[in-house]
Structures are given as structure tokens and as C-alpha cells.
Amino acid sequence: MTLTQSLLVIVLLIATSAFFSLAEICLAASRRLRLRQMADEGDLRAERVLRVQEQPGHYFTVVQIGLNAVAILGGVVGEGSLSPYFARIFVLWFSPETAQGAAFAASFVTIIAVFLVFADLFPKRLGMNDPERIAVRMVGPMQVLITTFKPMVWLFTRSTDLLFKLLGIPAHRAETITSADILAMTEAGARAGVLAAREQQVIANVFELDTRLVNSVMTSRDRIAWFQKDDPEVVLRARIVAEPFSAYPICDGDIDHVLGYVDAKDMFQRVLSSQPLALDQGVPLHKALVVFDRLSLTEVLEQFRQAKEDFAIVVNEYSLVVGVITLNDVMSTVMGDLVGPQDEEQQIVQRDENSWLMDGVTPIQDVLRALDIDGLPHGDQYETLAGFLMVMLRRVPKKTDCVSSMGYTFEVMDVDSHRIDQVMVTRATASA
Image (cartoon, rainbow, N blue to C red; front, side, top):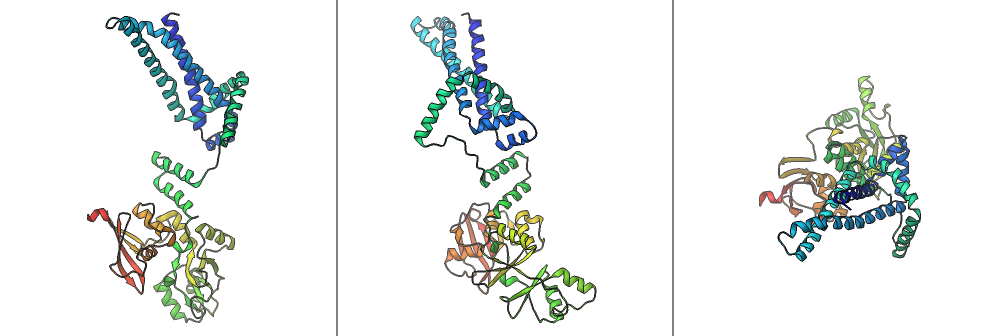
């Protein structure tokens, strides 16, 4: 065989190996969601790729037969065709025996390098760029090869299936998709510029609803504005002006005996129409939805949907009122500062690059997000920043008490009747 003929054979073998490498990587990298979308749009080839992905044994058997056969032939042809020419060069400086060994090594390295670049690395990187589009083009030729080499494929596939069975390894690909998978995809999309950072954060917040409890976003008991059932109109007006909310619980004696609630819109309409505002003179009293304080926000959303309400009383296991929650509170968790009042009573205020002033009732998830950390010690024992400080100190904190954790210092700045009002959070490295 002349050098030209040998080089043509090597080029053909490289092209064949590149074909099998491309077929292998594009099937493995193809996303089922994207293939299903292409199939729904009418691409029958995408449906064939999906079927192959469900049982890829025969497909990968043909790939490995082709790759191994080409690798062996490439080594034989390459070594036999290139060694004499390398030997003629090396014999100018070395003895014939040394030149022969060096020629073999040079031809071996050359063939390996050429195959590695053009038959492996390049086609695999090409296949990773757009795996679904390439997979639908490769599936037809590959199925022809599967049919052509069916006896050999059957033998090797059965042998592999037997080995899987002996080792107790599942032979089929698991297609479960978790929330972590979706979040990872959205983060990758944000890094690639496909999703805006705000959009990615909203998606992450939606998944957080399942793990975030009601008491992390509710208005706590000591901040509830409520009315006695027999409060005079002058008291109602003063309370509404001082504490404007969308709804007010109506109680009999104390806050733990809730009769219902009044909607601020109803009261506003009565004021505009010059009607009495007293509760015993026609102000509509709505039945209050009552939810347990250990429910997740997802469960609360479902209860809002079923009851067709957007306001609920939150009670603990002793049937004591611990807070109130609105649909807007839940949506504020999802949308962040796109929903909800923008006032001076923000729970987290960043003072500078390394310090934050936080309210004691700030949900711990918001604290973690503001500080860009994954968690704090004993995270299952509290829901708020105040709860974290109590767990760490093992007592009710006092003013100037400090806790250091995860590279941050948490200092109690103000306490009101055992309630932690403000906490100064400082990055520890900033003061070092």
C-alpha cells in the first residue's frame, strides 16, 4: 500500500470514528424536554431519539463496536504506513535498530494525536454544542447500522445485560427530574444570559414555598391591628389612620377570640357614602379563614384558593392566635420587592458593604439570602433571626449580646419587652 493509499484509509477511519463519537455524545447529551418539544412540533426523528434513549443498549453497542474496530485498524494501518518514513529520517542520526524503535514510537504518537483530536475531541465538543439537532440527524444511520449488525449487537447486549443483572444495577435510564435539577438549569440560564437574574430569583422563590412555613412571613401577634366588636366609630377611625391595613380582625374580649374580619375596602366605601362606621351598624363581617402555623406557604396558597379568601388568621397548636397572613404576604415572598409596600419599615437595611441592620422577626431565609450563605447552625429549630439568637444563646437575648457564626457577628441592638427589635449584622472579616 502506497503512502497516499494509507493516508486515505486513515482519513476514512478518522471520519468513521468521528461519526461514532458524535453519535455517542449527542444521544447522551440530548435533553428529553427539548426532544419532547421537537416531537410535539412534528419532528418524527425526535420521537425516534426518545425511544432510543429509553433503551439505548443496542445503540451504544454499535457505537462501541465501531469505535473499537476503527481504533484497532487505525493503529495497524498507521503504524505500518508511517513507520518506514519516520525510520528513513531517524536513521540519519541513529543506528538502524534505534531508528526503527523511534520510528514506531513516532508513528504511534502521531496516529494517537490525530485520532484524539479529529476523531474524539472535536466531534464530541461539536455534539455538545447542539446535541438534539445532531441526534435527530444521526438516529437514522445508526438504526440502519443496528439492523446490519443485529446478531453481533444481540450477543454483546445480552452479555452486558447479564453483567448489569449480576451486579444489581438498573439497566434503564432514570428520568426523574427534581426541583434541584430545575434550579440548576435556571441558574445556568441566568449565567448564559437566557434568563434575567430577577426571573431566576423568582423561580427559586417559587420552589422555596414548599419549605417555608407560614410563621416566616406572617404579621406576628404583637403587630396585628384588631378591633373589639363594640369599639365606637371614633376608635375605629383613629386605629385605621394609625395602622392602615387591608383587613382587621374583629375580636370578642381579646385577640384569641376572633369573630371574623372587616375589609378595609368596605369601610372605605362606607366613609365615602357617609354611612356609619361602627361595627354594629352594617359594616360587613367576613368569616375568617384559620390556618395552622406549621403549614408551608404552598399549603396556605391552596387553602386561600379553596376558600376564595386572601386573609387568614394563624393559630398554633394551642389554638392561640400567633399572627395573620395575606395573599400579598405570600406573593411578596415569590416576587421579592416587586410586590408589597415599599416603606421605611424594611426588615433588612444594608448600611454598607459589610454591615446590615435587621429586624428580629426577619425570616431566616431572607437573612441567608442577604448574607449570601447556605445556612446557619441548628437551622431546623427556628424560623426568624430572633429565634436563631435565642437558640445560640440558650436564653432571651439582652441588648449588646453577640453571636458569631459563619463569618458574621450578630449583635442585639434593641430589645422591647423581651422582643428583639433590631440586630446589627457585621461581616467578621471587615473588622479583622
